[in-house]
Length: 36
View 1 (cartoon, one colour):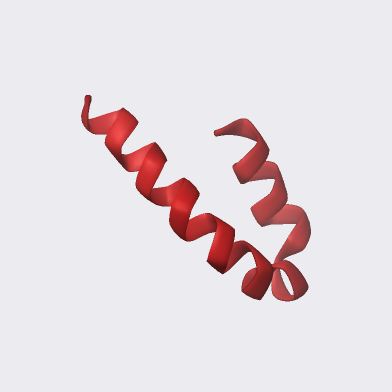
View 2: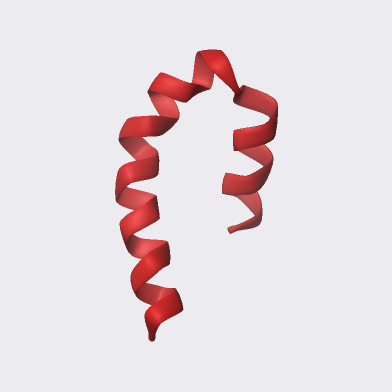
């Protein structure tokens, strides 16, 4: 359950952070986001 909660919070935050970090770390962040 804790894992599911973390994934949901990261997904919601990742959406906003993804756009910001997209220009800085796109390949590394994209790979981790796709695996999760």
